[in-house]
Image (cartoon, rainbow, N blue to C red):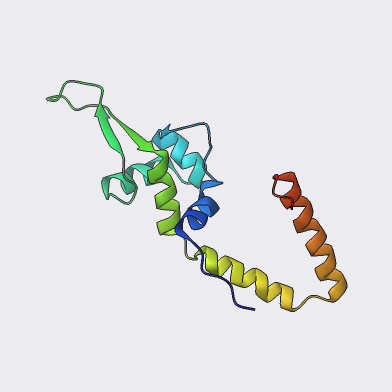
Length: 125
């Protein structure tokens, strides 16, 4: 079976599920929690423009003692997409590979589980 090409919006949706829906802006601490990394890692990634956002100084320009980083949700999702070592097509291909090795009974059980999830999400036919 051939995996159909994945649109960019579906690819993005795959990675968006790891980012809280109710937030638009994230601090370095919040991004670190989402990624499971240290705040220093996030600051370094910000400084190297791996994670893009806004630097806001809370002190006068000449002092520059404290800078707060704010990362928009879209940029966090973009970082997840760029740093992944797979695409959604790879992910789906692996699922297909697993399915090829299952018995008819196992596949029927998997199909029931998938149908139940689809119906719960409101996509029943």
